[in-house]
Image (cartoon, rainbow, N blue to C red):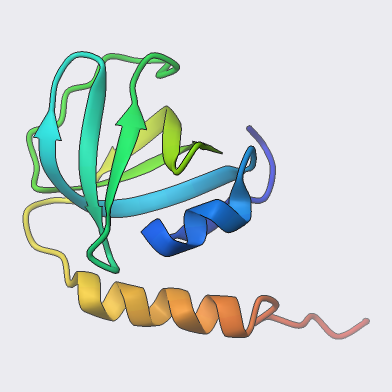
Amino acid sequence: MDCHKARVNSAMLADHEDQWVMLLGEVVDQNEQSVTIKASDGGEVNVSLSTLGLPWQCDTKFVEVTGKAAGGGVDAATYTLMGNEFDLGTYNEALALMKQFPTPFFQAPM
C-alpha cells in the first residue's frame, strides 16, 4: 500500500476504479461487513470491511478510510478516526483544489 492514494469524494470514485484512495466522511450506518459513509460531497459510499486488516472499532462520527476503489465503493485496508467535529464542506473545497492543481508542490533543483 506504499503508493500514491488519491483523496476522493463519492463523485470522484469512478475515476479511480481499482486504485488506492482515501475517503473521508461521516459514518451513517455500520455493521460487521460494511460501513456506509456520507462523503464530503453528500453522496453515500459503501465501504466493505472484508478486506480490512484490523478490527473495525469506530466510535466517532467522522472517519477516513484507505482502500481500493471498487464498483462505486471502497474495499477498506485501514482507517483513521477523525473525531466528532469535521467541516466536510471545507474539505470538499480542498478536494476540488487538489483535483484542479494535482501537483501543488514543486521542488526546485538544488
